[in-house]
Structure formats: structure tokens, C-alpha cells
Amino acid sequence: MTGTSWSVAVLVSAGRHPQTGASRACRGDAIAMALGRKIAGDALRIVHAGSADEAALKDYLALGAATLEVVPVSSHENPIPALVAHLKDVDLILTGCRTETGAGSGLLPYALASALDRPVIANVLSARIEREVMRVEQFLPKGRRRSIAAPLNTVLSVHPHAPVPLTYAFARQQSGRITPALPSSRPAAQPENLYTPLAWSVEPSPRRPVRLKAEEIRSGHDRMLSAVAPESKGGSVAIEGSSVEKAQMLLMYLRDNRLIDF
Amino acid sequence: MSIIKRIDPRRQAKLTPAGLRRIVLGDTSPGDQHPSARATGHQAPPKPARQRQPSKQWFMAVVHADRGRLDEHARQVIAAAAILATPDTGVVAVILGDFSGSAASTGADCVVVVPDIDRSQYQPERAVAAVIALIRDYDPQHIFMPDNGDGDGDLGRRLIVTLSGTAATHVAELSDKHVAAFWSGGAQWATAGLPRFVLLEAGAADAQLPFTGVAEMIKHQPPETGLTQKAQCRDLGLHAVDAAHIALEEADFIVSGGNGVRNVDTLEALAHALGAAIGASRVAVDDGRFARNKQIGASGKSVSASTYIAVGISGAVQHLQGIKDCRHVIAINRDAGAPIIKRADLTVIGDAEDIMRALLTALGQTRNVTNKTEAA
Image (cartoon, rainbow over all chains, first blue to last red; front, top):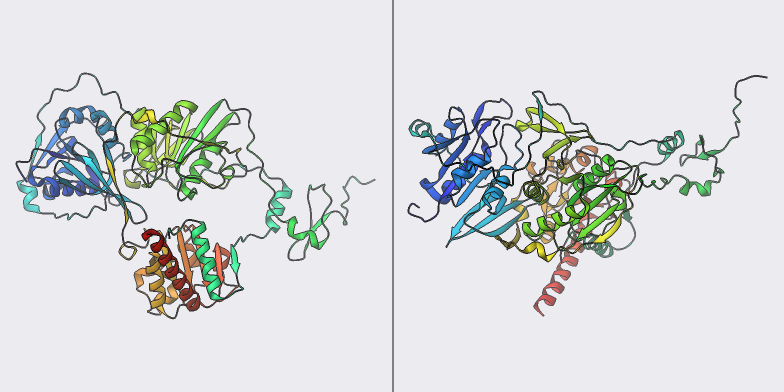
């Protein structure tokens, strides 16, 4: 697929295994990279914003990246300005849904698209380019999928269920290269549309979240009433009638609640 | 004279449904000693309105309606806004999509329905423009949204970057002072002050409220001026994956069979006619009538379908545990005393095979009628 007029880049991050904490390629980003390779083949540019010494980056080489460009960004710096400067000439940008380390807010594709003034499509399962128009399939819950026609210069965040193969090869890990990205002329001013970061304080040990409940001031009488009042609710019960009538009643219920559309 | 307060043994009392006589504490109304008044005596009293002064400021909850109703996650988000609101704060619920339910029980004081923008169409620019116009109108202190994969999480993130406000996503815990979320895939726990945009995970708040809202309904037409920027993406339509090929956890419509189903072919035909996935109870799976991966319940799968038809399932606790997130449960059962009847929204008592066959016939007739009207 070389020689095409459009370029594709994928953003990858350092991941960690959710149970063991071992550093690895971020699962979602690896899937985004596989989808990018399906679209652009070897012409896919793989970009990491962060440190080039990250051990997890080797995993991406093993998963098919021949070269990995690293845009130097320190961990407490906002990566958006550097990424905007680096990716402004790239047509299609792919990302994973959320990172495995840190906040994982899933805001980066939106912030990047907003800074580049491009459309963004989330939860992408597949993308196909046909005559300068991209056909995107979007994942929706409850077994639904949506097809979208999008221009080429779009930011896509790829859903972890995207049907792409992930093949790990040690030989590729050895032959691949991690190169620092060419320094680009950084914009002096920060882009306007940046979400304001919150001051998070992070604890290493998670605890069970406390559910927000309304405070209820009840008198002794109310408590007594709720103790003696019957608990169960139960819906309507149809006992009488023939099975045809009962089936009609069931169908009416489905139709009244708009659960079937015929 | 003794200072010990004497208790009148013949003071007011109520009779419980079990026939026990209960003394009523603090109730000064004439007690209903008549057994005939028992039925009304035990109904929950109407909930009071959330006490408040005229609204000086607003909290906003933005949710999508699902088939004219609000799902549990959306109700939790509006409830969270109502719980955190101080007496002089109003709660405005923005409901995107056609809405026909009652909103007072959600705790909202003002309900803005935008019927034009629903989940069936992909129009993010229009949705963002409509919500931003409403945010400009109300100028809310905090905006609460569900963080789901069904449009709300996407819209919320678009709003966050467009309005560049402080934001927290995947919020698992919140109070009037703080929000907290899991970081690094659950390995870390991060807390921060309550930001302007709060995207809530399911289950972060309790949707049951001891109060109601005023729920003044306002129909809102999204301004066409918000469409100066032409939509760059074109929606080519929704399609559903064949129910037989998706995981049971993801299915929206499940027909499930239990010990009362003797003829599995009928159940499969019914599931096919309704476009539903097939599930089963443990007994039916153990019996070899269904595959193990169809089992729903404590030792099987937990499902969250919006429609669950339980055919010939008595509803053991373990099974009810697996279907606790289902919205509409319909039971077809021969036993009118089975525990599933307490859980089901509609129960049909009768022979499973007969009712399934009648339902198949009825479905065939409606299909024919619909096809004929469409053809004409």
C-alpha cells in the first residue's frame, strides 16, 4: 500500500499488566496499531509521546512496528502541543480507547482532534478507505454497530474488540528500531482548546468506592412502617384466559414498552 | 405519685397483614383498627419534595433517553446531581431523545427534553451545540453525565474539550467535596476536588431518593444556528449483529429456558422470531438441553438485557442474581407461586409450550401485517 497520497499514524503508550503490574504494550494501543497496519501496511507511522527508555516500547516492535518514533515529553507535561506539532501533516490518526497507566481518561483523542480541528470518532471497530472517503464501523453496546462515512483527516480511537490479529515475534523485536522523532518547530502558544487538568492525589492501594446515597431522616414511625410493610413488588400476573390471549398480552407488553419494533 | 410514665395498653395500633397488632409510635391520626382499611394502611407515603429555596444556581445532568425511558445509569446520574445539590441549587436534567416517562422521581427540578437528538443518529456536532446552548442558558456549577459507551461518554468528552473545563472521567465515588476514580486499570485510587464535568461510572450513586423533584418539563428545539459548522461525518445507519453471534452479556433481548421447557426447538424458534439470544437456567443446562455457555446465574453469566423472557424458570436466588440488571423481565410459568413472579414485571401463568406456540403464531401474524402495510 505504499505510494498512497495519504498517511496514517498511530499513537502508542506504555502499558502495564492490570494484575501483575509488569510493563508491556498497552493492549488497546496494540490493537489500534494492528488496525493501522491493516489500513496502511508498512507505511504506518508509530508514535509514542514520552521517554524513549520505556521498556514497554520493545513490545510494539515485536507486535509489528519496524520503527517507533518517540516524541520527547516529560511525564508531567501535557503531550498535546508536542503531538500537534508532530502530527499536523498526518491524515489519519489512530489511538487506543484509554491508557493502562495513569488516569486513562480517554480524553486524549478528543483533545488532539480539537487542537488539530478535526473530527473524532470513538470506539472504532474497523476502518476502510475507499476513494478518499473512509468507512468506519463503530462499536455500540447491546450488539449494535454503526457505519459512518468520514473524511480522511480524522482521529479514530479504536475499541478493544476490534477484530485484528496480534502476533508477537521476537525476531521483529530484535530488528526493530526506536528512534527519536525529528525535532519540529513547536508552536510558541499553546492551543486554545485544552481541558484544564485536575489536581489528583493518587494512592497506590485502591479501596472499594462508597456509593453516594441520599441522607434519609426518618422518624421511628416510618422505620416501623417499612419494617411491617410487605417488601416484594412483582408485576402484573395473567392467570385467566386462553394461551392465545396470554400471548397477545405478552406481545402488548413488549409493544407498549417499545421493546420490539414490529 | 410515680414519675414513671404509664403506657396505655389500648393505645392506637395497626394490624399487620399477618394479623399482628402493632403499636404505632408517634402517629396521632386515628388508627385504622378496621381490617378493611389494612390494604391502604401499608402503602408507602408520598415522598416529600426536595426542600429548597428559589434556585440561585444550577447543577446539570445530561443523559440520553433509551426508548422513551431513562435507564438505571441515567437515573443514578440525575440522582447524584439531586443529592449533591444544596437547598438553593436547582437540578436541571437535559434528556436527549424522545422521553415519555415521569421525571419527578429522578429528583430533577427542571427537565429539558431535546427530542431531536437521540441515540439512533450520529450527529455529535449538533448534540454538542445543543448542550452548549443549554449550558450557556443555565450556567451550571457542575455537569454530571453517565460515562457509558452509548453516546453519553462520547458527548461528555466532546463537551470537556470544547468548553475546556475541569473534568473527571470514570468517576466511581463522589461527594460534595471530592471525586475518586480507579487509575492504572484498578491498581491506583485517585481523588480530586469536585470538577465542573463529572462523568460517572454506573453504580457510583444510588438512584433511590427519599425526595422528589419539581420536574417542570420544557421541550427544547436545538438551535439551527449551532450548525454553522457542517457535519464532517455522515451516518450510514445502525445495524444489529445477529443475536446468535454476540456474547450473552452483550445481548439486549434474551429468551431463556428452564426446567419447564421440554421442547427446545420451540424456544429456539421463538428466540429467532424475536431476534433474541438464547439463555438457560442451571437445571436445563445440567440436563443437557442447552450448552454450558448459555447458563445464566451465579455460576453462569450475569446479563444486562433490557428484555428478559424467562420460560419455565422458577427463579432460584442464584438465577435472579444473574438477571438483576435486566430491565423488563417477563415470566412464563406454570406455578403461580414461583419466586420469579416477584421479580417479573409481567407473568403469564400457563403451559410454556402452548404459550410459546401461541406467541409464535401471533408474531407471524403481526409480521405479515407489517410487511403488507410496508409493501402497500
